Structures are given as C-alpha cells and as structure tokens.
Length: 212
Length: 388
Image 1 (tube, chains in turn brown, purple):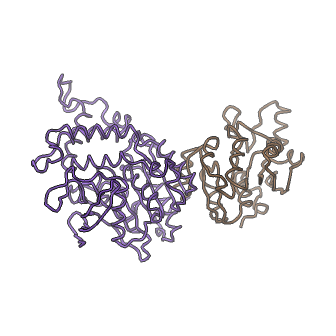
Image 2: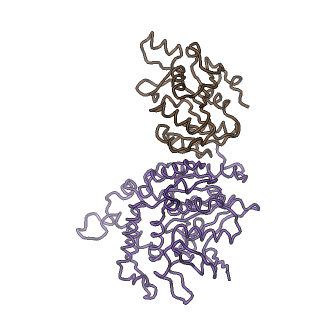
Image 3: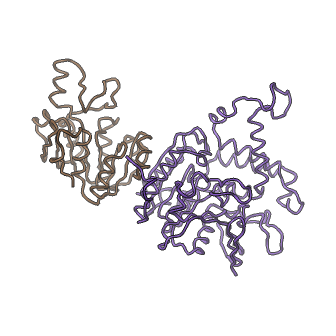
C-alpha cells in the first residue's frame, strides 16, 4: 500500500516523495502514460503497487534502454513533439513528473496530455517557495535548491513556474485542480481546489491532479 | 499426400497438394518447408518462438550448421541459457520459401524433374509468412509466444503482426522497416543486374547448363555487403591498409585489405547461395510495403493488435535507419499498441543485429521476461534474473 503521508518523512529524498505522491493519485488497474519516465522508477512502482498497464515516453536513450531491459513498455521520444502520435483518450491517466519545466512548450504539452488522457498528474518544483524568493531578493542570485540543483547555465529547466502560475495556466486550459499535494520539509499537505498564496510560499514541491 | 523427412540438415515437411495461394495469384501445388526446432514445446503450447531469418539466412540460427560446419547465424543469441533460451522456449526457424536451404524455391525441382528457374512465381514477404503459418498448423501450435527477426526477418515479424495478429503474443522487429525504401530497392537492383549480366546466368536456366552465374552473384554480394557495414566500422577494421604488399601495385589487384575482404565475401557467398533465390528474395523485400496493404495508413495494419512489440534499431545502420523504426513506433502508438523501442549505440552498421551487442541482448532478455510473466510462463530460476 502507498500512503505517502505516512511514508514521506525526512528519510526519503524529494524524488522518491514525488513518485510516492503521484502513485497515491493513480487508480488501480488503469492505463497510464508516464511522460519523461526516466529509468522507469515510477512505472515499476505503479505496476507493482497499482497493477496498472503502464507505458512510458523518455527523451534519453539510456533511460529508455534501462526501462526496456527491466521489462517496461517505453519508447524514445520528445514530450514537445511526439505526443501528437498518441490517440485521443488512449489512457486513463497521463503523468508528467518533474518534466513540465524542461519542455519547450508547456502549454501545448498540457493540452496534448488532456487530449490523450482524462486525468493528468503533474508535479513541479515550486518556484514560489520562500527560499527561492529569498535567494533572488536578498542575494540577487539565481536560486539553487535540492529540487533545482543545476546552475542557471546548465539547467534543463527552461520554463520554471510557481504553483500559482501553473494554476493560472490550468484555468486557461479549462483544467480543474482536483487535488493538490504539497511537500514542505518532507511533510505532505493535502488540499483540493485552487491553492492559496500561503501554499505557494511554503511548498517546495507540488503534485497536481487535474481533470478536464 | 504429405510427407515428413528428418534429414541431416534439419527437418522437412513435404506437402504434395499444398495449394498455397500466393499474392501474385498463382498457386504452389507442392511445397517443401525446411525447418529446425530447438527445446521443448510445453503442455500448453504457449512457449513457441519463431525466428525469421534475413535475406541470406537459413533455418540454422543456433548450433552447428550441418552444411557449412560453422556456428549458426544467431548462435550468440539462441541456445541454452542464451537470450532466446532454448531451455525455456520452443524455438522454430524455417527457411523462407523462395530460398535455397531446403524450402521450395526457384532451384527446387518440379514434377518433371526440372528446376523452376524463372518459372517460379514471384513471392512476397506475405507469402513467406503464409508458408510459416502452414508449418505452425502442421506442428499444431495455435499461436506464438514471440516472433522475432532482423532485417528481412523483421519484415516477416511485422507481417505476422499485421496479417496473423491473433497468433502473435509478442513481436520483436529488429533493424527493419515497414517498407523497403527507394535507396534499398536501388541497391537490390544493382545486385540483380550483376547476376542478369553474367553470361553464365543463361536466362535463369544455368542448372541445365551445369554452370552458375558465380561472378554476377559475387558482385551482388559485394555491393550488398557494403550496405550491411558502416563507414566507421570499415575505417576501424581496414582503413587504407594494403593487403599482402608494401606498396601500391599500379594495377587492379586487390591492393587494399577492404578489396580483398569484399572479394572473399563475394566468392564464399556463391558456394552457399543460389543466384535465382537471390533475385526472388530481394524482390520480395522490394515489394514489402505494409501501409500500402492497409489503405496507406501504417497504424491501420496494427489496429486492435493485442501483441506487445519491442522495436530495436542501431545508430550506425544506414540501410534500415532508426528513422524507419521511429515511423513504425509512431504507427504502433497511434494504434494503441503496447510498444517498446530501443536504439542501440553501435558502429557496426546493419549487421550489428547479428553480432555480439550486449545492450540488444539485455533488451531482449528484459522484454521476453516481462512477456513471459504476462503469458504465465515461468521465469528462469536464479541466474538470468536481473538485480537492480
């Protein structure tokens, strides 16, 4: 069983917490597409714990090869260009874990996701977190945190946003925030509907469950 | 009357009233299928893997080839404890029709004792797969756990999935394409013209003249062999090295190692392959265009498929480049198929699928194990299981 609120303690790294939170939002026995599935960690978790029919899309060929040799159905591809090859409503749930900020056209990616699946799970590092605001405000430097560890010139994160920014984009795309899971100091907070300014200040990481 | 022969080079099924209707409309009345099997069919008949061979392959992927004495063409991949594990799976390989390793082809004898020659009907990849279906029926195997093959073998894999999908649980098309490209047809045409231009070809009736178009076939093989390699591999292996000499001959001897190597490839090929078979099989590949058979939309070839696919390509393969595999994967995705796709980094060109490529082996082991779980087949006991 996955109970992220019980599991998400300080011993787990942010990556793992993110996967556990996402898995907690996936229903048993459903068809799932994981965009940017990396080495297949989340897919393996979902297959083992949620008994899903999981497919993956991954940019790095190394990640793809690792997934396939673990028996996962993964293809090499780019979220920005290859989602158009997936059929309408071919999946129950489409997942984008810590990947949206690395896409070229986040809006189009979300639109494609909502065409492919009825439920979207999107997780991002929250650029609205107070520590990030402080780093820029006081030090005048681009923030580097655990979730955003690369330097500004090396980061793949070209479209960073705060959780309120993402909420605005979801409004524009008529995507409803069903659930919002935020992580602060390794602790998980659960809310429904539009997140508050306070959440935007406190959350390091956020997982949205969105529906059309 | 049907007959079964167990000869030194594998088994043969002879159907004297086969009535195999071909894509060109003609009917093969008598049909001989040469094949070989490895391992044991389980009680559920659910562990059969069909290996489809490439243009110049035969039905001896594993173990010693009884004709040449050399190891089978996929010996690194097929055998006890190997990725296609004959301790776990019942492995079948059949010489394609049109071939020259025992199955009915242009060098086969007709009822009057003369070889078909150019009277043999032009066959297609679809016809090859139809004949494999006949073999499966005869072996009383309802469906295949997996059908796997590279190059022309991969075309057969795709044909199986598209035309006989109900008999395919999983499919591994390697270094292949859903249609033969213009460039590939062009290379084949060069090879065929070399054969046709050889005076010893005799309009295809060289057997009656007790000769064979050895030079033409050798040139065809030399040209084709270049397409199976890569510039990087040729440079690494041969460079501009001279063969058995210290300086240029200022003549047309095989000055360079690459020339000597190609000549050897050509000459040794004619000892094991029939020129007319080369014409027919290259033609079958040229005619292959799976989308065309389904109204021009490749995804429609795989509509409603339940098979799981693992598509494999190689970075340096310019004969069946990765772009062909990507088109295939997109079509499979559009059809909602369960598809994996791996591009293996290798500088060995198209032939990489026949060579020792550990990443390809890991991919196939992982994919087959996952498919075995889905099929309810037992996994290997301890060794072979992966550790994270």
